[in-house]
Image: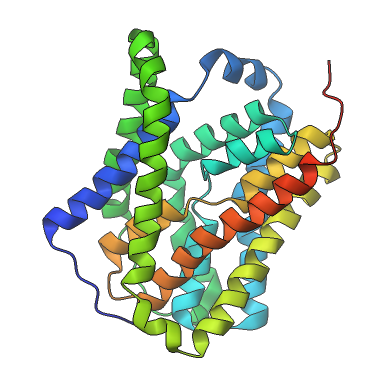
Length: 296
């Protein structure tokens, strides 16, 4: 399923700048003293990273090999599994009485790591998927360069503002969160709007259920990995939400830049970007009603 979706250089630069601002906003909300406290107990952080970077990609490949969806959808599934660090997971973790500090830590580490690991994991995933992944080429060098400008640089800048301009950082947090939310919604909306003609295709129904099952497995994988390592319930909830909430905005930016003719791929990632917010909100609300005593 392909659609010829081309952007002029100015439009593409605007989308890339939007992603950079979203990452900058995330950096402004990182509480360095809280992050240090979690890093002093790295075991639970490693468990969360294991769920995000290994368990979810592995389950994604198993699902692909079982269902054998069309190549564009395979590519979208592999890409979304390679883009952890969805920022709304931090809010959901707090709502669900999970360890919000752990959630922020995992988001920040994954945001930093994705500049290198996302292109590599995407390339490896497509190779393992075999013919199900189609014949997409992965321009590793160009992807790494783009992510350096749109992820590493704004993340570093946001942390620098916190360190050297704390008053300005405090004033920017609330408005930057709102602007970032609007920009993320706009990126997802563009992905859906550009492929609105595909919504009448019967394969879109199958794609939607593929997203639902894939996302549900992501939440299950996060919780299963956390409990397998006997992680306390608040931390398990944070790991679960971190694993199920992926960075669909990052995935779409990569598609806009490198695969603008892959309409099916773009539609799947954009649909995930909407669905995981709804599913995560339901899960967080369900957990909110089952309050646990916080550890001393």
